[in-house]
Amino acid sequence: MNRVRFSAVALLVLVLASVVASLGAQDAPAVTILPVNRANFIPGAMFDMRVEVAAEAMPEDFAVTINGTAAAEFFGAEFAQESWTVGDEAAPVSSIVARNLMFAEPGEYMVEVVAGGVTTSATYTVREVTNAGAKNVILFIADGGSVGFFTATRLVSRGQEHGYYNDHLSFETFEEFGLLSTSGTDSIMTDSANSASAYNNGHKTAVNANGVYADSSASAYDDPRVETFAELVTRARGMSVGIVTTANWQDATPAAVFAHSRERNDRSSCDFARSIVGAEGTLSTNFVDVMPAVVLGGGARFALAPSVEGSRCKAENYGGVDFDAYAAYEAAGYTVVETNADLQTAVEAGNERIMGIFASGNIDTWLDRNVFGDNAADQPGLVDTTLAALDVLSKNENGFYLEVEAAHVDKQLHPMDFDRALAEGIEFDRAIAATVEYLDANGMLEDTLIIVTSDHGHSYDVYGTVNVEAFNAAQDDTGKRAAIGIYADAGFPTYVDEDGDMFPDNWAPSVVLAQGKVDHPVFTEDFQVSEAPRSPAINDENGVTVDNPEDDPNGLPMTSTLPDGSNSSVHTLQDVPVYAHGPGSEALRGVNENIEVFFAMVNAIGLDPRQ
Image (cartoon, rainbow, N blue to C red; front, side, top):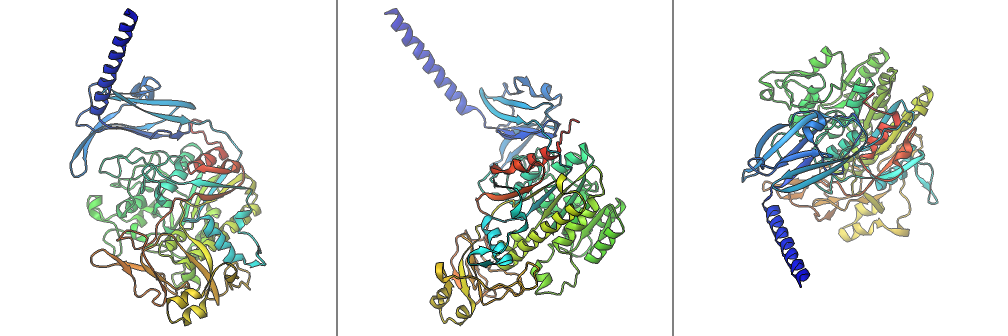
């Protein structure tokens, strides 16, 4: 009897304790730990750490430990206290942050935060660094590419006979192939900033963020940073760094090489343009000054002084100073060039630091430079800029890291300008082929890791062909749809490449691809090459997305699959392909998270910053 009574009492105590704990948990403030749970590091790589508590003041029991040791003691660093409010309701947030931290040894580390009687934890993995024996690393990114896109690029570039492709794209012969998952910390859907950021630092982050974990503060420049591959090789190895893009060179993907900011906008682009020369007043804060030996792309509007017409920068952001980044580049030892002719001259002269800015915004597309325009601006193509970068970078006996972006794959898939996108895909392939040839001829191929991938996908695919004459002659939409061939009626498109340059001789053949996307605004589609860059949908004065009457007026009407205000298509969830060649390339075999690109690059060259 006594034993039964004791068990009942014990049970009652346990229930009451559970209720009290539950009430305490309900009253406990929400806690956010940055870096996030499951973050991966290498020993000696620098990062910032922030803990946020959704409260006006820290609870009395607030404590942060690493493997049971107080965080400040573990890192030998002071944590600063900060506070702010969030949202229209001004919800209070209390925070502590410490900067320039690092883990000294590989292993598993448990972060535990006690706040209001509740413990929140995150587990970090610090990986051993191996060495595959590479000296150089080149990362090629076809922004927005996918398996479907590369397949269509191969078809248009190489052609088929009896269902057999005449050849593969150059990188499709690399010995390693895999898939990369691209989701970020805040959404299943990724952006170029956080996806390229993962490649360059080994950490997931949020949409629009580069080189930081996104916290809840209003500032874009106080978020906890993580050190990039370029910063690491600059600090620890003295390697040269290069950036090549067909976009603004301060855009999301190229900026991921060195930049740290929560937002990608005009302000951050202007700051990125100035930060590499340490300009006073810039808010972008780097762990170390990465002075790329070569930067080639567009983006003059973000480097011009605020007083110059066309500049997107504001003097009030820089204390009223009319700062001219061009002059700063020259003062820092860069040879600044604005045409392909000047670029080649600078390379031939042996200049060791080149800043090439070839357009106010993005460099023109391949079609607009080579088919529908005369390239009066003498803009270089991706082959020109990639080979120029290699000439500059290969002078460093310590090796180099080069990121090359075919930005217009993404920028043309957004407005569904498919022919322009495919031409960019072919140019991307040609740049990779030229790189392999260059490295082989100069005895560098076997000690260079080459990675070819996309930072995210688009829902692009091909589902048949279109008889152009029948489509244009049709009197109604039913007749236009009848001109689309599917299955056996599709046959083959009639692109021809008689001159052997891998580009179609005629971008308006009699039979073209029936191609499209799952996601799109309201628009019309005629499947034929446009002589000017497309703008298929526009927003009216009420913000409602409508068909652009000046784009494809004879096309088939397509209803929207997107919210109003979205006048272009968007990114998709799909894993993206990755192709790799050289020392350490086997690390990217199979299906992996996108952070594995960073760790593959680290282990290819044996990058241990502690040494």
